[in-house]
Amino acid sequence: MALFSRLLQPIISETMSKKRTIDSFFVRDSKKQKKTSAHLEEDEEPTYSTHRAYPFPIRNIASATAREIASLPARPGREINNQPDLDLVYFEPYIPPYLSRQLFQFLRSQLPFYRVEYTIKRFGVETSIRTPRYTTVFGIDETSIFSPDGDGSTILDAKTRLPLPNINIYERYAPRPIPQCLDQLRKSTEAATGHKFNFCLVNYYATGSDSISFHSDDERFLGPDPAIASFSLGAARDFLMKHKPLPPKSDPDPSPPPQQLKLSLASGDMILMRGKTQANWLHSIPKRTGKNTQSDGGRINITFRRAMVKGGTDNYYNYNVGKGPVFRWDETAKEMREWKPSDQQDTILQKPQEEQKR
Ligand SMILES: O=C(O)CCC(=O)C(=O)O
Ligand SMILES: [Fe+2]
Image (cartoon, rainbow, N blue to C red; front, side, top):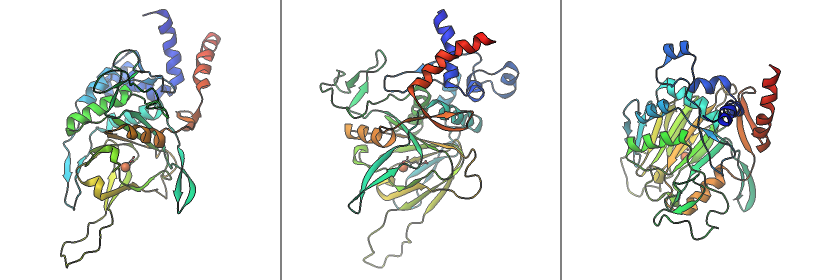
């Protein structure tokens, strides 16, 4: 390997920081390697997914780990469809505990996150909303693809495979390809569910105060009866589901009203919502009060979805990336910190000096 990249490699890893947790995902000392797992590759050079729209390169998972993800789910899914219009498949878990722990640490430290602010009209008044969790998104709708050659910076029409005729098409936000560390899971999910996905949305709930209120993912750009695969990593949180309001009954009907559901989603679990579910049910992750709300109650949620038209791409980037600052996990401070482009540059410049001191 060229001297340049050898020199650069540890510097980049240092920029990515999180020495112990992240390195242990890839490179283990030989004693630990024997004791804990034969799955993770020893001494594999880290590689990165890069794209001009990423704020920084996103580290790839090792090839052995990627192969493991391809072999999932750990357990077959169980159908939950005992209520009107409800059609779920619950994998408990999809990702086994040793792998979900590592994937949680890895994704938390490697992905760029945002705390999006936007305005809505509430009772005719412009109201500012600060999303009560960190979010990020990758992908592009079904009408387009990232050019398979080069660094994928060119976007092609999905049918003609020619560059988009109008350069203004995705003008508000430059779409980002799904990085390898999430794309492995997307492929596995497609194989396990028989559904296709072109978007990956990630939520990070830092504490019990982070939440998502009752909503359904029934946007028109997803098409009718969309399938959404939703993964949990890290702290367990309650996932509530309730039926959308029903019109009052006209005739005496003996069928009982739909019941609210509560699933305690644990690390590694996956819930597939499909069929009539989004059209008829709402879901939420309520705030959690009491103990265990502050410390490492961090939870990552990953959803895979399939947007059919360009409006879906703009909507997802608008609400999950936005125009505000980037946040990145700081392993020393154990919290998300605002990240600036100069952070990366600083580390690259500082590191050789530090090494000379030793
Ligand atoms: O965090 C979760 O489990 C749910 C997230 C969700 O509903 C969404 O992002 O639309
Ligand atoms: Fe949702």
